[in-house]
Image (tube, rainbow, N blue to C red; front, side):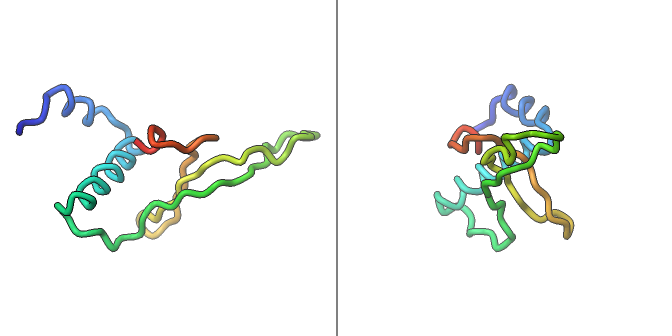
Length: 92
């Protein structure tokens, strides 16, 4: 089955963050179908955090909780803000 040209163009236009999310989704789908073995690489972990805004005199700190994704890349711990809500669409 050939991939749609519009789909390929859309994938080429994705930024690094969106490509990582797409990779997580496709790897998960392939593992579930049995097409590939589960990867032994460290996976992305999701965590909720409350965050201080840094504004002087803020009476509502800490804010949140907010969802963050954490992973290791080139030996360094990386993180990315996801948002207040975590749902299936957020991970896609």
